[in-house]
Length: 253
Image (cartoon, rainbow, N blue to C red; front, top):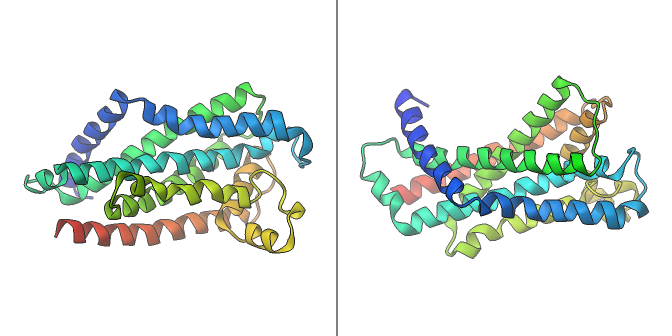
């Protein structure tokens, strides 16, 4: 982005972040569902599920983190849809500002809000007994994977927000994303699943991302697994970005 785009994006980012600080329920709502799931799985089902981890909260935290992001990006689509319907987009287009800055402001806002939500969820997990001996590099790698995953889902949210016909429709796309970890290694080992379900679980992106984060937390060798996880995130990000830009250009043309 040029200096002009950076400056305009920064101003619009400040506007979006002020909206979130004035309605903190956005972040609270985002973290309530994953935290409730974590409490239920750990204290109700955890004792009946055999895993290779020292504790069940250690095993399932990576999946909960992905669900947190999937919940959070629904608000990105909603904020985008609201701006479109309120006419603020047209008002911005009449001003001498970079057109792409409007979109990038929503994307960066999504990243910031989701990072805050992830920190809160990890904090609750620590209170519930989550422990990791991972070093600084491993934590940075986990942060990088989650950042890439957040960007990928955020651009999907942009496509949904730009194409939605109603507020409910704008956020409905997140439901399959929230459900997808249940058909992966996020909560139970895939070896316990019946054949067709196991085949799907082992070859969908959530399983490779969850396994990579879990191995990093557990200080186990990640092998090629981390590259598979990064390839999934990057692939989804590129495809979603292209569709989002094309959709945005049609909207403002």
